[in-house]
Image (cartoon, rainbow, N blue to C red; front, side, top):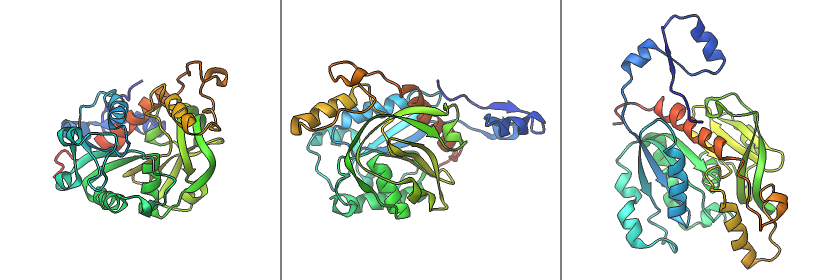
Length: 305
């Protein structure tokens, strides 16, 4: 399911208010008349080691909407990648100095395998803080994933992360906790993957009046939170994961530590030799489609400059 474009109705039609109260996307004649269309400019800060795999996962979701999207890729200049060649980065990626004078409709900050380190111990933390400060004035809405969500909550709001007793890996049932545009079309209960060693706690987010908890899980904890103005979206899980990503991570970890737990609620009968059942794809598409449509396309100015 892809996000629908708005219903255009006369400005004073009585049904308009009813539809809006039912969370139906309605655009009045005046707004529709003045609306111009251009490609959305989305910047992806890819912090994952296997950059090509992450690119495919994110672009698949960004491309599954009626909106035209123009993507730029960025990597950290203060970090030397061990898994992606300098030639590849030079051909397809930017560094911050090359984009800092440009404004973007949206930005995605991915996760990174550094969550067991303190933020200040990460070798590119100072550069990342500079980039996150820059998003306040140069990006309409920023979508933070997993460690990127933890980093954003820590930098912008001072919310800390906590170590888990063991890695939280699996596909978990989540509850919708708010009626907001980001969750339009979502079922009351839905699945999403998680893969992390640390967590941000719901009660810490709820203490901040500028943040709102949108979804959580009894097993996995906080999943979705957002700033009240929608400029920052925080996703602690990995809705972008491919069907076999958790499997590949499990066998990678198992080769290093034979006590690693099997991802929860993932393999049929918890048997790693059987293929997993994908339970999260439709809601992953909804999540990214809703973000692009309601928090980027409908909010960004036509002339970004």
